[in-house]
Image 1: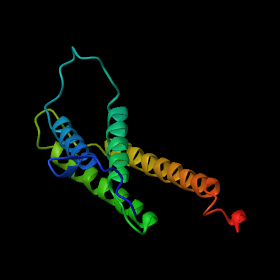
Image 2: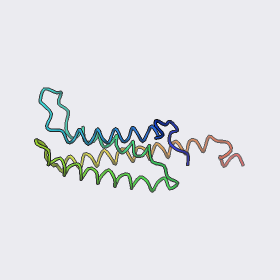
Image 3: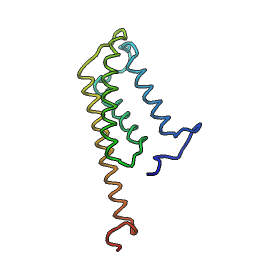
Image 4: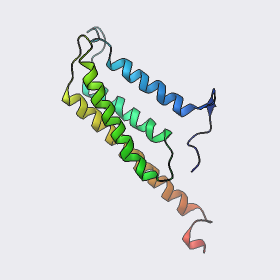
Length: 140
């Protein structure tokens, strides 16, 4: 299978650099003390959903495998393990606490991203194969 992107920076694929930066930002953001009330209020669960949706989407985009459908359960497992570790370590930060509902929002964001990515990828591959006259069964 071809690499997802050929763009490189300092010898690393740009997508992998974006994933590392995003994951670092999530970790720092979830381990900062409570934000002051002067900032605009965004539902905590929406932030968790969005953060893990982005993480799972980037993981799907960055990973390549010859067994493409095998990687999706691994991505879900990685995100869920990270969500557990993230929630447990938040209790070590002043003003933060662990919350099962935050974990569920993380899981929902992860599952939504992986299902969406897999569906779009499948549709794109199906469309590409049907429109390619060399690969199309009607061309034979």
